[in-house]
Length: 275
Image: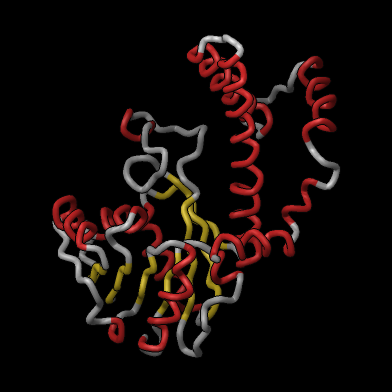
């Protein structure tokens, strides 16, 4: 199996390289920038090329490049790929927006990490501090065969498990479901809410509450709130807490706020992401 990893020296590319270089897979590492190539050699002992010499021979071409470059890079290599090869992207946005030129005989596979869960069974300090995943802590992954032959799914998933390992679970979704997860659920909704929570905590600090006190109080409550809301504990919020939630919803949220999960709204967000 021949793999070409494009963007190996970038932030995401380095994460994938760290795991791929430990295997006996035949991987050609591609990195345009000289500093990126230097990092790959110094950190992982990997010799990367500025340009690929084997796109036409590759079974998989992995695109570890920014979202806004995915269509440009992907559409530049697809014409050179051999029949039955797979273009491997790390985010659903460009596929959802139909920006990749689907070519008959070429498969398009998408895989993205879930990152290690907040509540987990990790026991080592290294794993507890592996917030991104892909090194010490277990994480799940989400996959989609966007276009092509069903027979490639198992092999593509096995590569994803290596890149993002150690793996907790592997899920399969459609591209529409993928974009409801990201950007919909985790970026548009969750990141926005958590950013607002951080802004509110900063207000408390400005009003004189000790920053460490604010941090400790908030982090502890987030922990137990996750446990209660998502069913890790068989208990409920107090009556007082439920009343506070009910009272605040109308002040904090528009009645139709969940419209951001509708396909047309997600499409607007995706367009901004890849522009």
